[in-house]
Length: 146
Image (tube, rainbow, N blue to C red; front, side, top):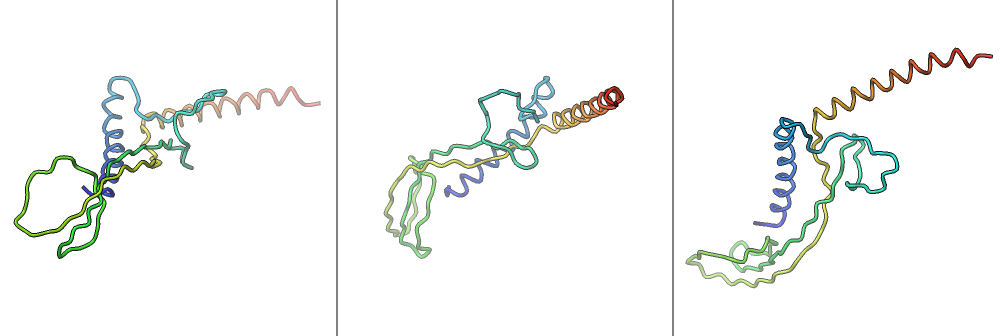
């Protein structure tokens, strides 16, 4: 598998796995990647950052062994592929191939899908809090007149 395909599939499967788990976990009373407010004074951040829409951004660490094969065929060219250490099969062609294996480490920021139910609950709570604050401010503003 080529490196770009591996990275694409890994990130897509992580995101899809989170999305698929949200309904199952919600059915037993929990949330996967809920919409949350950060607690005041909390010094440890469990995610890398946030998007403008509030999605948590996590860093996905990749540590991949890749092989660079320079294969002399009609196709020509070198390609990076995720290294496989077991190769079975063969062909009747007469190809010449030079291979080297390297290790590549990198991080990719990934904003995971929010649990939609927790987002609705958070928005409803924020609206209730804002309304309660407005009522409280109106009630107290009468006492402040001179």
